[in-house]
Image 1 (cartoon, rainbow, N blue to C red):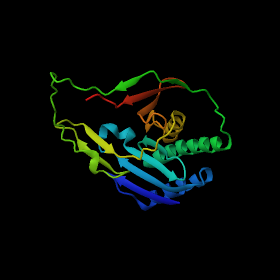
Image 2 (cartoon, helix red, strand yellow):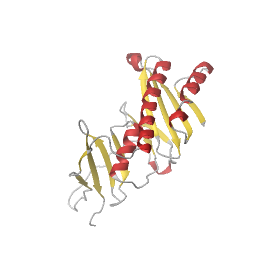
Image 3 (tube, one colour):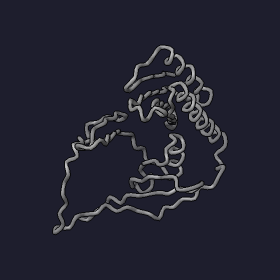
Image 4 (cartoon, helix red, strand yellow):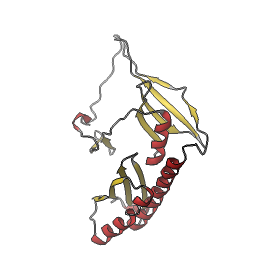
Length: 215
């Protein structure tokens, strides 16, 4: 299993690299099909965010779903421990589902909401604001780019992902594996762009985009 450690706004000390590699090497105990682990350390230079200045993101790639976990702390070693703990728990759930496909809890879905793409009528005008953001067409799969939004302090991060068609149930599993409150996907049956998201408790929502418009 390959382990890649990179840093943003920080340097990777050999002792830290060795600590990370030893920690994430245990991944194969839960996920034997793991082929690569990407470890990204981000240091926040703002002193007001000292309590969460060290951010760790762990991403596991293999012959199966992508599993991700992240954590923040004032200490980068502690951030690694927290992120690894989250990751191992998700890997355990993945292993358990592989052994038993029965659902351990009900999933209540709200699929009532469909977002239609609006077409401007001829007598309507829309002001186009130049945000300074470049198109994402030149980004490769897995590549990310950060840019400032106009003159504001807002930073926008764009990233391109593979979009394999899947069912809603599969999308829910993927959302749990990456640890995000939402997951964007293409529905295998309707071919609509969709997003599943946490609502409250064990209930989830599904938003669907109707991209068919009359010209």
